[in-house]
Amino acid sequence: MSEENSDGSETYAILCGECRKGVESRDAEDGQVEYGCSDCNNWDTREEVLRISKEYTTEQAQLNLNKHMKQIASRSKGMTFSGSTTSDKKFRFVVDSPF
Ligand SMILES: [Zn+2]
Image (cartoon, rainbow, N blue to C red; front, side, top):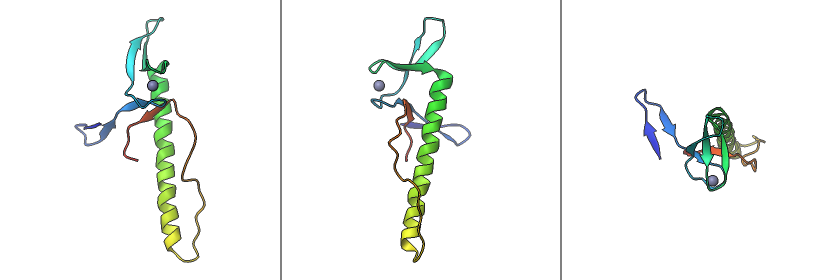
């Protein structure tokens, strides 16, 4: 689930970190719009949802890079690489990215 923007970059859907359903929006009591998941009652402001999903993307990119480094190091004699390739950190919002 992704779409191509006119500038060539791609937009990925933001999903609920609990059940991986696409986030929806709702009108909050104070007149603001909240984004999140009604199934999990997981709601937050647009800024917060974007911040959390960006944090998720950054972490996934780092883990992905570490995996590559580990592969390269394992093929090279005498080279070792240490860095985490998995994370059990929980994110309330994630991105439907190709990692
Ligand atoms: Zn959910």
